[in-house]
Image 1: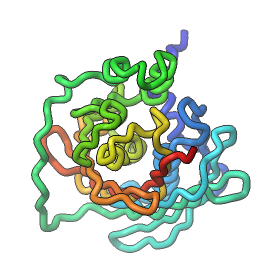
Image 2: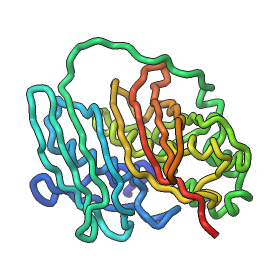
Image 3: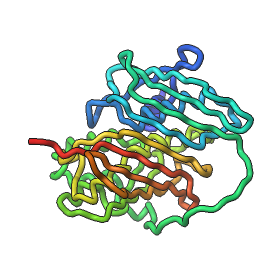
Length: 295
């Protein structure tokens, strides 16, 4: 008898792209549980998977830079075309364009490098409570079910994120609507299940999660709850990541986030991802659309 798939199995299935021609891949899309468009983290992760499929195994992803051009349509697959920009002795560069309905919806450039020794230092990991001491997502959301629109909305949010165990240190933006806070946010996260040892898989899973909460710090500065309560309209505009050290996405990672500025209907956020033993694994920067609804 076949075991039923887990939410993590389903997420890994989304990242297992179909190759339809040399350097051309097709990815499926998840159903729109929360908003009527494809989740940006999914598109970024799939594009990085496509790029990685054309790179030698001895070269690890060290950075990506991307732009979200159009909302993704969850009703149709996404086609990813990879352009082999450069294959050098140490570095490999790839460009990926994601297309739906004959139009590009996302553009990514990624760089890969063979391992080498070099100078090394890092910022210290900020203080944070142990993730096991924090409320689960179900507990956090359940405590604010009335503000979010009731138990059905809570169920849909949990369903959209159930492949990932994500725990807020100081609570999400909707927990302090109308109460501006310092524009900083921390979450711990890991996948809800073990992953294979493929380092590229862990990088792609972190890319997926990195788009979930990064703009929270922008909202906190203004006491806004975000899409969950409908007091802002938002979307990712661009997204950049640098992968510094090896890590596992199925072990606890601290995502420390802050917003230095917001203006012109846009908010800038930056994040640092640390392993539980204090190693700086990833740096992230994103600018997002953050508009106040009119009328």
